[in-house]
Image 1 (tube, one colour):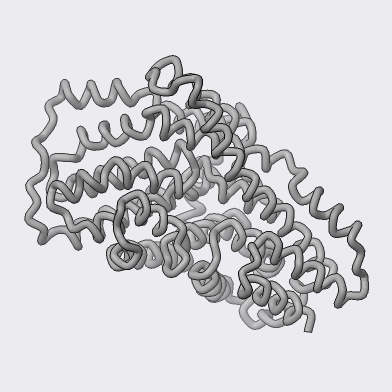
Image 2 (image 1 turned 60 degrees about the horizontal axis):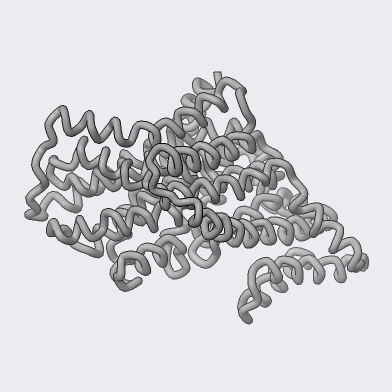
Length: 426
């Protein structure tokens, strides 16, 4: 009955169009009323404490770093460098998009920011070269969701806070899966684009490649600084976010000189607006998370799933299917905040490594950004690329299926995630 009241009130509020953050608060209030302990003061107190977390300070700084990266010319230089390296091969523009997405993922941590940048820079070039527009848009959308997996990742920050898991370990564990996602996209692009009669640009000589590398060197230096700093304990993930934002600002203003000081207010405002939405979601979700714990909902779910606890791989597969279904209708952040407090006790009871679970959970949520009908990244690519949502959805299917296949391969073989994670963590 308790589970029915929580889910029923949440889904009913969302169904009538109430924003997810307020729906979470309403479901928390309904659960509190059912438990006979309704108190507005407790609701307000948990709402405030929900966002009062030092690790969450990483969110606004990573958002700001992404805004500065796109406005300051870092994204364009990364694309130019990728073009110089692989633009000349058959289907080269697709590989350029994938390579640029991997590099940019290590700068912003935001799939939407990367999708906007890649669609604006590469989609017109791919269409002009003769590639199918829907397929090209689908590839760029799929490549953009690598951003929440390769550090720095806003998704890992939110999950780490909600699940009380080391964010540094999540960051380092996400590197290998993010690179594997890029490789899966390369193989899929080779398969679907092999019959296209597109003449690639000419091969760049060594001098042109070196010039492109030199131009992009400062942009490429940021992910190295973040990963090395985290690995050797130079700074925490929250401090890494500050380093990323300040580094991007200094490079954009004083080195590349493409960002004017009078643009900063607009960038800060855009980052602040996005951050406000995320932080309010986190605060509202923490109200529900506290009540879920008080109502002992996780214990009830653990008892229901007890037959699966002795089969961790089967349990992980079932959880991944659940997240796929939820991801078709809900954005990444609310999915993380709603499901994490419910699933973590089950994961711990089954003896599944929380870092391993976190990587696959965030990967699944990231792929959810390109699953119709809600797909936030699909909408971004459609809007920036001036292409219909139906066409983007058709183009994204082969790449999305390849990413899901890779995810379930990691469910079967956890070593794919954990061996590189342990090596990187030292």
